[in-house]
Amino acid sequence: MTVPIWAWAAVLGVILLMLAIDLAAHRRAHVVGVREALAWSGVWVALGLAFGAVVWWAWGGEFAGQYFAGYVIEKSLAVDNVFVFGIIFGYFAVPREHQHRILFYGVIGALVFRAVFIAAGSALIASFAWILYVFGAFLVLTGVRMALHREQTADYDRNVVLRAFRRLVPSTDRYHGKKFLVRHGGRWVATPLLTVLVLIEITDVVFAVDSIPAIFAVTQEPFLVFTSNAFAVLGLRAMYFLLADLMHRFVYLKLGLALVLVWVGVKMLLLDLYKIPTALSLAVVGLILGTAIVAGFVRTRVAARSEP
Image (cartoon, rainbow, N blue to C red):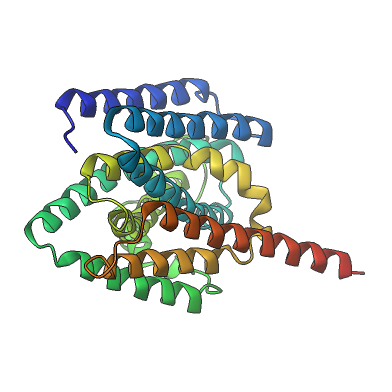
């Protein structure tokens, strides 16, 4: 797959333009409702699908299939981020009108960190082809660990990164509107918004360690790896506000995501024995996630009806 420099520049231009439009549309702090979140989710999904159509037109169906498979996998794994974001926002009692601001800067950081990880992963694969087996084994182990420990909750007061941040950066426990830093006692101190932003960024780095190898299971083309990641991550904020009030219904989603990681890990381990078709891989991912979501909704609905 030959990708000219201008194509990279055009993609980056579109991403920056959409981020600027998003920032302008949300320059006033307000609570993002379901209708607004649904509209923006539609915009981001349409943009991701439109880019897939461009890939199909420019490079053919096989590469388009790889892009869509990567996009679906990243979009699916991003739901796990959404759950963690909800836990963090609840733990620190972040006002809802300021959550979009944190997620906006969080997405920018996610794009930068993932670009670095993708470049490093592509360089490793180009130099050491056997690293794909390491990625595959890592994904299988990660999926098994996620399935076994999906009920665990985090205690952020004991978080190593958070404790180090508070030791290094003077902080206050009071919110000051949308400000990340304020003057207090003659010095600059971090508000809880900055603390939460740091946790959001660290969380995404941790998730990227899982999701980037998963993308390499369906394509090793750096352009497709980056664009499928980027267009999936761009819709992360809207997805959070869309699903924020429904998180309790996805009781089996964590298990479904764990199975997806195991599936793509096995697919990667079998590369030299049998190359699983991209369409089949995409169908299996869709089946796993669809089953997990439907089963979760059925269980919670039955449980709600049985309550007195």
